[in-house]
Amino acid sequence: MLLHASCVARGAEAVLLLGPPGSGKSDLALRLIQGGWNLIADDQCLLRSEGPALRVEAPAALRGMLEVRGLGIFEGLPMAVPGDAVLRLAVRLVSAEAVPRLPSPALWRGPDGVALPEVALDAGPSAPAKVALALDAAVGRVRQRAGAFA
Image 1 (cartoon, one colour):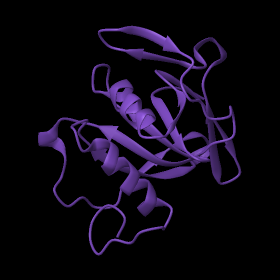
Image 2: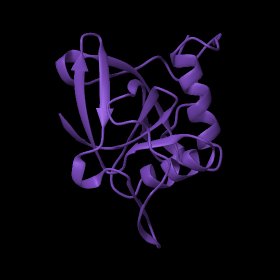
Image 3: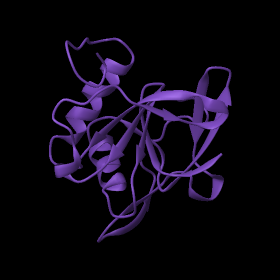
């Protein structure tokens, strides 16, 4: 399944960045890469289900490239091994006003009905830290008393 989205990984755990054009997907990916994450795909992601898991990679024509608004298209950034990452979280980028203060758990459905936890975040300055924390919660490394992963 081809999807308009960007994707980054920390180790073999991938996070899908969703949102309309101009919502900050590539910008957030760039900030995460600068924090040690690896790029999987920018602008388009190829998803495939393997049983209960979703694997993700970039289409061949876009592999290794990241568009940075105002600068252009870059290549040679730290990349995850193609097909090696398993999606663990979907992050939908929305305006700050649309982010719920205390969200209920939500799911994003991929191919073959595979479901991932989904959170809505704005692409503001704390977004990279929030994505890292949300990934840790999604895979059970940290716990919540209330909110998106409770």
